[in-house]
Amino acid sequence: MKQWRSKSNKSLFSRPIYKKDWPKLIEAMIDDGLIGIITDKGISWSVGGYSLSAASVREAWGLSATQYRRFTTYIYEHDPFINLYKDKIES
Image 1: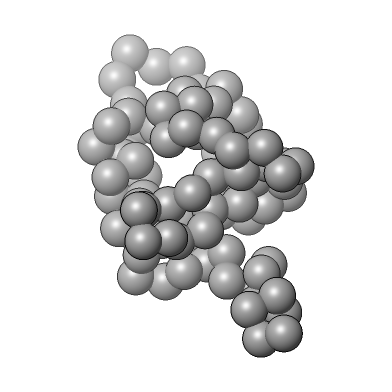
Image 2 (image 1 turned 180 degrees about the horizontal axis):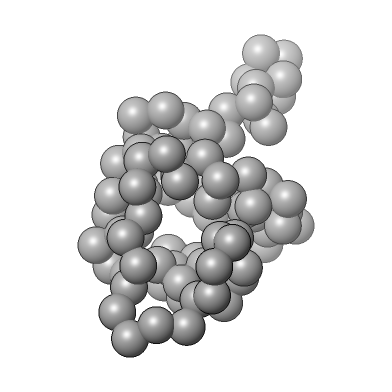
């Protein structure tokens, strides 16, 4: 599991992720080379040009199914990865 929080990841239950924490997770994903692009079929995850499934992203970053659904809602509302591919869209 990727480390993106300051405290230990080891606990019996999933720790809550608050709205203020989503940008931290996204920044850690970007630093790791992972990007999520909104497509007509949902969010397309890729790292280094390789596609990833949502399940593998969830597992790698330690997100429960519910946390992942909330995270995707945040991505749809804010599109935080747009700055990474904005130049390609405008060209």
